[in-house]
Figure (tube, rainbow, N blue to C red):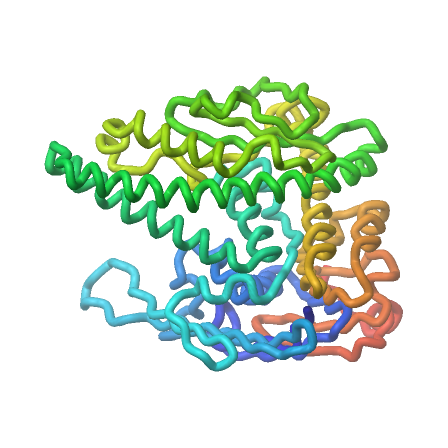
Length: 438
């Protein structure tokens, strides 16, 4: 896949900017707070249908402007597609402190859609950025969304499955709230709740099964990369945990002694821990096992869920834990070890998506390449195929391996404006021009 052109109008700090991208390496060079990460964010917004940086959609609109639009044209498997998103502020009552309502307009190849979810699964991207440390330091939601994005990249139809599950959870929660407010449950309402139980179990078990399979595949390569990064001193493992109110939270001193992908507790238990390593085996627990656990959990915790007015079980509450040499990485790994672990998993993501797709994903490196030593840069470079388009943001190019700069197109970013340089520019040309963004 190759992005041909990106057009931003009133997006973040951009009033208007248009960039034609080179099919190989594109280096966005500029000081901090000039708009480099905003450019990456715009690409991810159209690739994923959401932003990881924005608290609300209102944040994406340039201050003082009523709307923003982002458009991207890319080529995939010989065909050209165009993705476009417009966000417009709705009317707000005078004197109201509430945020403006945001009206969304999505177009895919000129066809209008009503949801941002319609963007997902079309343009495959793999990103490396400082926020990736959230794989260890952030909450479970970050890890779930990371795994789901990989799944959608590999199988776009899962986007619909995830949307159906979220919709079912929302509708079931509304029913639970109604039951709580009424203080009793009629026979018809019990039957209605059972219908939602069945839907959640069906969609939820498919999502969890897909996550387990992908996690096993990621570990298949992640272990190899972690071993290289640690000079064969550390072994990597992970567990996928179906969380519920009856299951104990992971203890900080938890160890992982079994290096195969197995079910921690039997399928008859309410809490499953699936642990994995390089074998990447996902058959130890089936979708039927998971569906049975979910249905049993809903039945046994009916009154608790009504009292709390929310669905307490399912993939929207699950988590993933990582381990180094048997110890929980969050509690025991140093900052350097944590960075290496995250890099190993992101390299595994790049390898997995590249191998599984008929077309290479677009690689996004947001201000992280300069943080990698030459050995780590070399390991990343070894995974980049000749047809893989790469977009790099940085404040300086000192410390980059020469291969990153060869035949690269430079785009200079300053106060929300973009200026492109021909791709045959050399590192010496940049230095001789007296440009210093460090």
